[in-house]
Amino acid sequence: MTYRHLAPARAQRFAILCASVVMAPIFGATIDLPSLPSGGGSGGEGDAQSASTDVSLNSAYMAGVAIQADRWFVEARGVWAALAATRQTPRVSLDTDTRLFNARGGVRLLGGLAATGGFRRVAVTLDAKLTLPLLNREISGTATPVYWDPLVGLDWRQRMGRWVLDANFQGGGFGVGADVDLSAEVHANWRLIPHTEIRLGYTVLYYKLTVADVRIGAFQRTLVSSQSLHGPIVGFGFVF
Image (cartoon, rainbow, N blue to C red):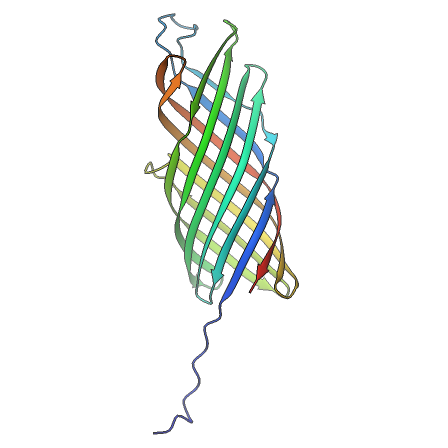
């Protein structure tokens, strides 16, 4: 038997990317602090309170690793963000220590387009304070929820010489974890020298949380928080 006429199998190409990214996100939120059983009637301290913050500039840090082949990829990364926002009228302040871990995989469908599936772990330490303007009294709630959100989405990538352009969208939560979990990103990656990459881009993240049994004063109630995070990305990576 001879193998002279058999074409060699095309080798599967792999690339491993380790990246460290600094983000400058703009953060805003709405908070619903539920009614307290004070019996004070409409407009009093017993009514449910809802307020939104102004948007403000914050900082966040991200690190991750990705393995890419011709037809599939997997990646995992973590984000840490200490976020704060306030509004003077009515007086509301929100401080969060947010830790996100996202893992996903994708299969190429057509050209640079891939279908993706994965999960996001959302761990938040949430401190919300609201001053009731008529009573000049402050109510507050603190919660430390942790959610595991299933995610589905799309990913697109295109190489142009030294540049690699990519964009992705993920959506999930579905009430299994958070009520809503949405994110979108666009990146331009420049291969400056071999094995070194500079990443520029923009990211948008929105999630809505319903947290049961939050202690507000002497009572326990359900707190609802909708938080948005968006801003530019700059970072670097090493490709092997």
